[in-house]
Image 1 (tube, rainbow, N blue to C red):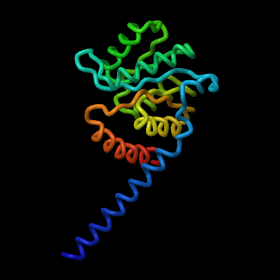
Image 2 (cartoon, one colour):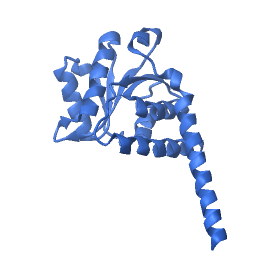
Image 3 (spheres, rainbow, N blue to C red):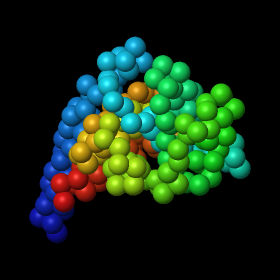
Image 4 (cartoon, one colour):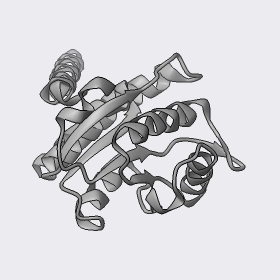
Length: 190
């Protein structure tokens, strides 16, 4: 019994070490593709600004999603290209309305209501929209994985971090994101 417990403990520790290594790898691989607003004009031939969805409650956007959309408006005002909102139908509808309320031309707003996960959203950029170069907007903790997936799929993706504060449930999101980075790393090598 002691031998089984020791083996189980060793396997558990090795698993944790592997997760930490993968998490660090994903975070570091595309760190240089997270840019500041003043560097946007250095990137040429951008197909779209991509805003990843987040919680919506009866058409009311969450603070996290508002911060993403506010950053998208800032970027749009600099480069004036299409904004693709991705998420559930409810998220995308609320996102579209928020952008229209903030003077974004309705003809410049595109939607992906089949982007139900970060991985699916990135896959849709390539397969459905045929985008080759994008700017992704989400909070920084989420950008690492988004950029990793997009670039692994062959999209030249850059990221701009939305304002990041300690949103309600942030510790849970950080832990979930570590697990998701590991999952998507494994999916990308299969």
